[in-house]
Image 1 (tube, rainbow, N blue to C red):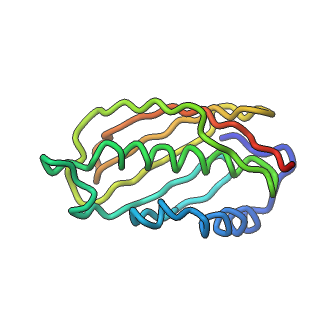
Image 2 (image 1 turned 180 degrees about the horizontal axis):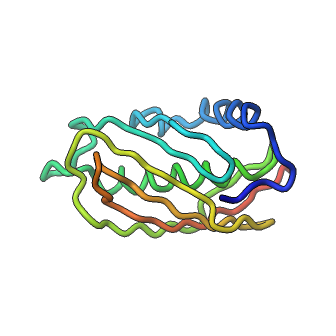
Length: 144
């Protein structure tokens, strides 16, 4: 696990990330919640409902990619200072199995945190089955 250069107390980090969640409207719209916040690592969960399905009843690929992007991005956010943001510049998602079940759980972590770019990975699980893996590059956006 990657740790920030200037360690932030875990409680302060979690509070900072929770404040950022207020503006994550799409995350709220799909019903996702962050369940674990640690330096360089995030987990999120979502209860699958009918509106999350594609035409054959599987979790929609866009939803799965969104969950992968969400946790990778927030994992990167945990390693930047207050007032600094990150945006996705690249996301590659590989779908391994259809998402059929009750719950999606996404896990994201930072492989390498750089000054301008953070390289991240994530996994999306449906119940106990790994259904997708993703790699993401996040650009660090410094305050102007």
